[in-house]
Image (cartoon, rainbow, N blue to C red; front, top):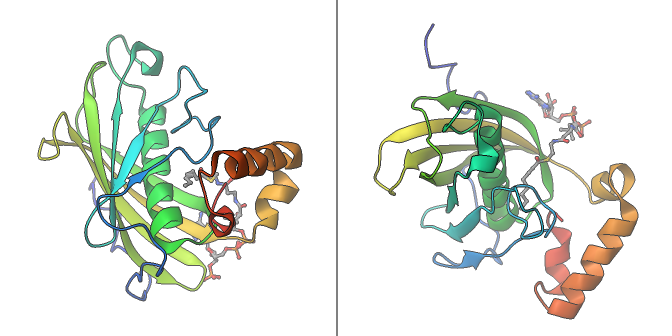
Length: 196
Ligand SMILES: CCCCCCCC(=O)SCCNC(=O)CCNC(=O)[C@H](O)C(C)(C)COP(=O)(O)OP(=O)(O)OC[C@H]1O[C@@H](n2cnc3c(N)ncnc32)[C@H](O)[C@@H]1OP(=O)(O)O
């Protein structure tokens, strides 16, 4: 079976245009939600992924595989690796395009085992947009930014209105998060418009 699942992006796209208020290359991107499994500090067994804006519509993310992330003894669970890519791709979409969006489709290609203790260096890039559809892809390298590729991913994010989160999510938790952000001055008011 071929590893290649078809042309990417699968439809004609506009080149990605970073939002004028997108953070500059080199900016460390904070935790977007303390209880997020991908990046949140409050989730002990979470991935604690950390991200920085790169050049040319990219975001660089890192996370270290712990025993809490195992599938087989000493090896990362593939589903958790997919989670790391969801987070890294979502971070690129949310921070560079500043559009609220959710994952519609996520494809992962596991090329090498990822042992506990290794650090995955993920480079996520915006590939293009077609209306509400946002195409992104990423490679994750083992233990160094120029290490061997262990996992690759492609994702389709779909732009949504903020009501996606308030209708389907937990409105009280959203209010609490907004309040915490205001108190911490972690985000300016307008940054609340991107994904919580
Ligand atoms: C900084 C923050 C980091 C956060 C990272 C983590 C991100 C996440 O994990 S989000 C959580 C996981 N995702 C979800 O829960 C999403 C659940 N799904 C949904 O809510 C809806 O299906 C949703 C919003 C994706 C699309 O629904 P809807 O708004 O009705 O739009 P819909 O018309 O169906 O789709 C819009 C377009 O996308 C296309 N599309 C949607 N899903 C897919 C898919 N799986 N495959 C291919 N195309 C798709 C549609 O064909 C349509 O294309 P076109 O405009 O050409 O007709």
